[in-house]
Amino acid sequence: MARPSYLLSCALLLILMHGMDARGQMMYEVSLLDEAGYFRWTRRFWTHKRFPGSVELAQKIERKNRAQN
Image 1 (cartoon, helix red, strand yellow):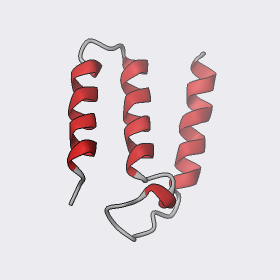
Image 2 (tube, rainbow, N blue to C red):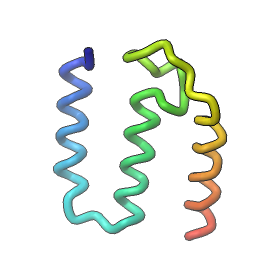
Image 3 (cartoon, rainbow, N blue to C red):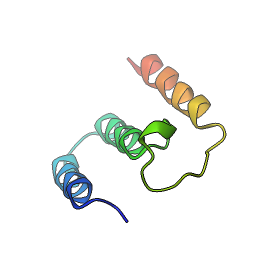
Image 4 (cartoon, one colour):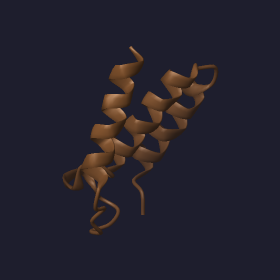
């Protein structure tokens, strides 16, 4: 079960995300996945399951983001 402080943080970030441009929304979504432990298993408090390819996906998103700048 998710921690209440984590759920509150997610709710607040969703409120802040309102009105963001597409790039800002993408950065929020990636940050949320990172915070939840999708990219780094050491942060994954909600499951012990591994996600093959998550590091590669993070690198692909980072390259795409840098190319857009």
